[in-house]
Length: 72
Image (tube, rainbow, N blue to C red):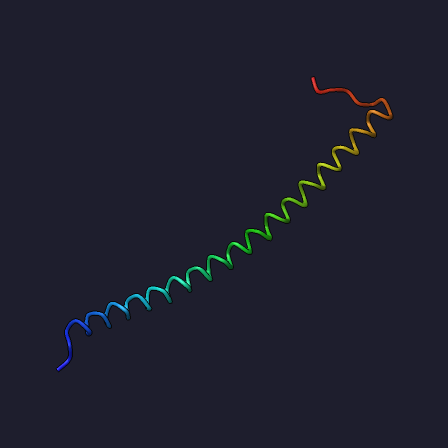
């Protein structure tokens, strides 16, 4: 005859293992998505740096050629 306490402990352990596997899968998906977001943010950051440098260069050029006029 099986021990009811041991059966209950085994059932709980099985649930814990199943939930841990599900959590691991979810964390793997989350990690993949975070890597995609990080790559996209890096691209956006690079574009922002490019446009900032472009704006700075344009400002210097306009001031050097004395064709810069502040916005009205």
